[in-house]
Length: 289
Image (cartoon, rainbow, N blue to C red; front, side, top):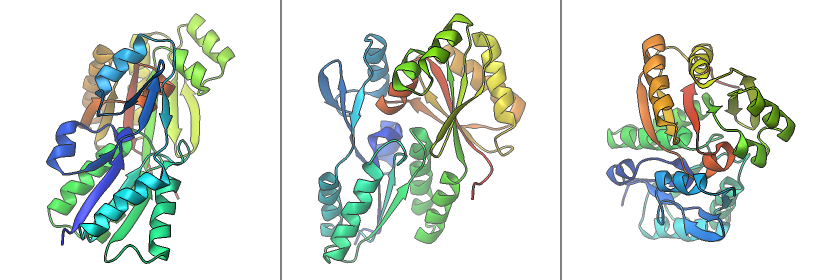
């Protein structure tokens, strides 16, 4: 009997290298962009996707993973005799994917179709590498021989404290997606404002409005110093603003003493709301009740 498997969705944005190295099963989202349908991570890499989005005025549309697809996946796990299946999924505030997985697991259990397999379905309450990083760390802990209970406690703690910050250099997508009101976005563009957007659980809000790219990077570093638990690792979701991202990483490491733990290109979910030019950072804040 295989002891465990970690399943997540393609919104996790982890690298293909980590996916393969730790045997993580990633279920792809179906994405539509400019009339073309594709499977995320299969038909196009995250970086390729960002370049495609930059070339069109449209916002990509992502379809939730259905109960039927989860049930098929879970049935495979039971057939293979996997003892524990950890399912880490995109924030339920932004997608019905998590609830679909919960429903599929519950229905199988009620009908007596789970056998000896236990399904642990977790709402990450975050996006992108916020749970992609957690999936990889969980895999490392399990590989090192840590118990399932300890790993599940780690995941709950991380999701109770993970905070996402987006510094937007272009407000077009945020305006279209509704993350920033249209009037505010127009005014922001006129005044060269590069807003810092905080996304925690179900809440999204602008927490600072620095002007100009260079000042904005410094402002992001300073703001995160007030939010992150000292000396804890941070994660960066790559956009196409690579020079500014690299500048931020260097300054934040120097000033905070924290180390970059993971960096990889984001995919359709983040790009649909933030566009292709931003700095996306995940930090460990104080634990929320």
